[in-house]
Image (cartoon, rainbow, N blue to C red; front, side):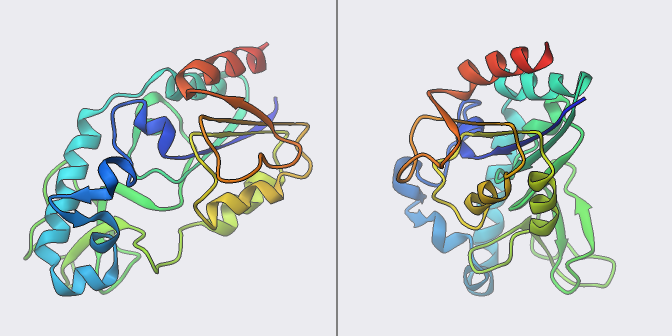
Length: 226
């Protein structure tokens, strides 16, 4: 049994129909995505921020795992597979992956504004002003906004550093610190990058398979299952 770590980005979710922050010039109802995904936006216009994430949650719930998600889940039948994802949807989990680290949070959850350890399932419902945690504080999206620290990064480093195989899929390697995880894949005997485009040169020692995740990932997974 091999230890496989998969680092996934927006490209794999885009193939299930979910738009990325860069789609349509990064605008939502004439508001910049970047302006909506920040503590400052939450302070100034929390109703608008909630509306934005409520809509994103519904779109994520309507999306379905694609062949890349399903192939990664199937790898668990023979290997120890950990998914480290930049994505905030739950498509990996719904495909069947059981070990998923969400660096940027989860749309399906909300958390307390006074105690970040109080995390709740949104149960697919919209979050409104006046929805409170058990301490009486407003609930906010369980999402890492610009300017906030990513979640479980130290755990992700440990997983990548112990991996026998590393697959990076659906990311242009432009988002940090997630992109720096590749630097810790020193002992992996096989390193593969699956994406249409990257920011700069391909990382050293990674084989770049240029194209869509739904095409390449099932092929790689089938070979690793042998």
